[in-house]
Image (cartoon, rainbow, N blue to C red; front, top):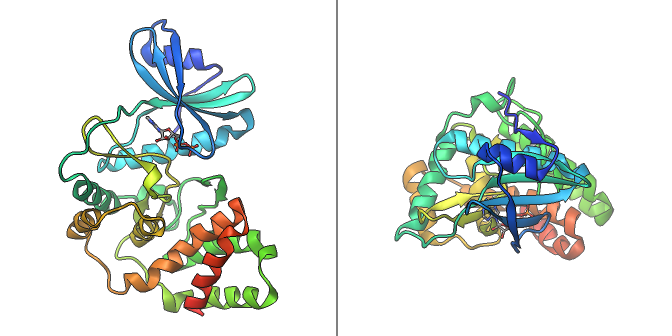
Length: 299
Ligand code: ADP
């Protein structure tokens, strides 16, 4: 399975290709909230609105991977994502052009509906994304600004050890003393006792915190900014609990659809160790205390 986003050599050219006729960008309104890229709502001379993210030209691969991830979620047919129109380079910038999600008012059962749709996404057939293994993705991608290797593995626990925890631990090595590094080594060794294989592999959003969904004009949740891979669905749910912002109704909707595996709460912080290590690597030692607290819990 390959997904190729159309690539252009200027934003103007890409915008015109979307509409198939000459149109001008009349306004660029900056949107706050992202931590990596510059984001704008573009207003066009024909009244349409588009969304564009920009970064330095050498960051183009971030956008290609983001487009791939959004397409995979879209293909699940379970939950809305903005349509990706194009990406490309424009002078010293790269850009990702997509549908602008017009903000709307949440429907009454917004969170239940969101939870239910996420569960449906987790149940969708995702075998096409993992080639020879069961867990991973067709390409590597990014978790925030951090590189994420998705080479497929047959077992979830093997994937989580080799492609998730281990690379982050290696990157963060200088943050730990020798005793802590030993604890980390032991933790990796006993992952088989601590984690379980899922009932079925699931397409995950991969970076599901409350800044990565929007309310569209249909009043429902739209997912943005994914770091997709095929894994254990619990890993997505664990991340929703890491920084909060998902009310009880979300979990009600989710678990009514998908069911809850026994012992999830005992595994939750271990899944989130991946994100805490990524934060430690990206944002520095303010996250060290949280990482060490998880280590104490599982050692
Ligand atoms: P980053 O890649 O830097 O994390 P985000 O994807 O978080 O950027 O987007 C930056 C801002 O743009 C956020 O406020 C987000 O809510 C908003 N946003 C993202 N995608 C869209 C979209 N398709 N339509 C409208 N607003 C969007």
